[in-house]
Length: 225
Ligand code: C5P
Image (cartoon, rainbow, N blue to C red; front, side):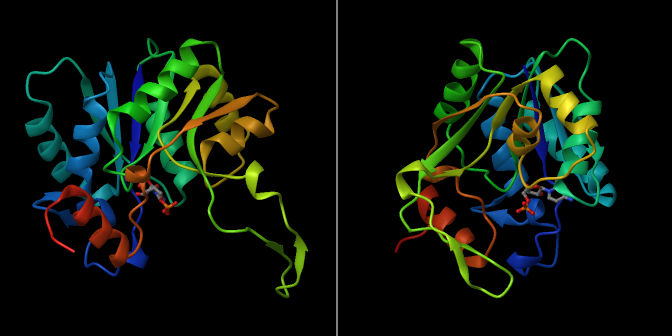
């Protein structure tokens, strides 16, 4: 099993002076937390995708984390969109890898149980499996003018997370289509493959704003409310 960790975003909404994955949370970068979580899932290979100017820095940070563990790790530069970064990571996996998980470094506190649920669904034969949580708000679909065009039934909605797992050939074909999307499942769905949603976890939140960072710190128990 191979994992592509995408960490090449700028993280503008966090308002930091560096790319989001290099911001610190409780004394370690988001990237450090994310890769540590990924390694706990027992991958054969990990490819980390970072901004081009951060490749050397990420290589040395990851070397210290991996130590003498069994996983092969590679760091490659990302692209303009998340989809480009995932494609760059996929291309760097060795041909032996037949199952791929794609994980956002921004979801750096994702517990190992989530990785395990995704892998278990793939082992049962799913071509794609992604974690998700029921939504608490009622979601509206609106047009460009803000007028509501649809109100999907809340019970049928899931807020999805990463890691998103796929049969490698299916994911590669989805990326070869040249489309872009905010998650990989959308590309695979567009090819007509079934993707199953397994139970996600609140701790797999995507750190996007300073408030999310504060919430992640509380989850880590490093600050008090
Ligand atoms: O921008 P967004 O919040 O969707 O980013 C989700 C993940 O994708 C983050 O971990 C971010 O670093 C990564 N990303 C990337 N390359 C980009 C844009 C986002 O690796 N060009």
